[in-house]
Image 1 (cartoon, rainbow, N blue to C red):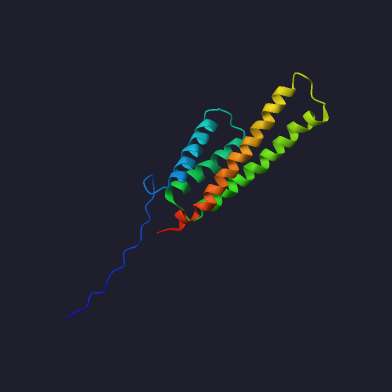
Image 2: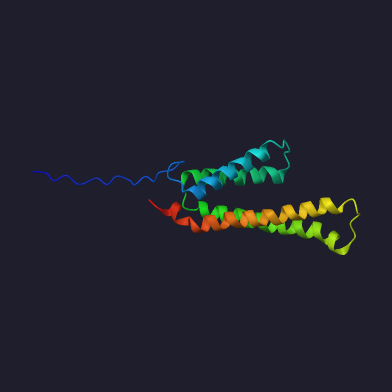
Length: 139
């Protein structure tokens, strides 16, 4: 009698839409919308192309549940937050110092508010990715 060895089948993690938690689904949809919005601008500056590539990698990583996806996403959004702080500082200084023309003040205020909202939203994305990091490491 010959004994047959049990063949271990590789564990395949489910990827795609179905196993995603709701918060990751919302994040995924928003990242896809951001990617499409960037593509529709029809500007091909090197910084925009690099951002497109980073977003595309994030979309693929989220979809395929790569173990490093949450770290990559958090890093991407931390960089985005830091850039928003730079925008905020650049447009708020003329408002605070009073060097902005009267006609420019509403525009500068709107840009500063959008930078603050960007920081808040990206901060929420970072928190979601950190809280749901176990989803990317589960088998």
